[in-house]
Length: 168
Image (cartoon, rainbow, N blue to C red):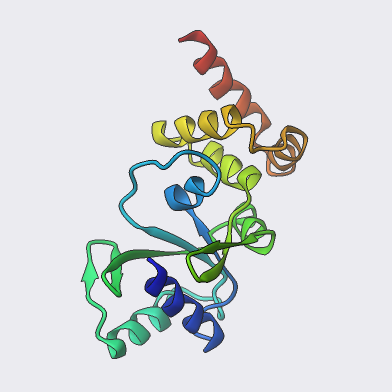
């Protein structure tokens, strides 16, 4: 993963993509015990608006000879999925990412509060489990999390999810 992160940072420095942040399962492992995850999720701010925000990425990796594997790109032997910041919550998460270190590479990682809020928004069962684990691990500032949920209209959705988890 270290070499894949180096390539992703090169893409950002070359203007292929805008600011980035590691999200998903790998981001969660910075805060809680490791979870099984398939790939490195890279949230990014596209350089240009439009329908083909992934085009510059695919052209770049094609020139470098990195193969595609399902929805991921194999960069230095590690599957990387590029996810454009698809709404205001994800854009805010990228802009507020914290620099953490993986081996010798510093990389921006989505803060735990945003990771939990994005999981609430997505709402899949694995996301609901991620929120619970982040909260149980006491890595989420509850007041910051609640403010993010309120700002992005997710408070009611969270109350429903929380209610379901308390019923079990």
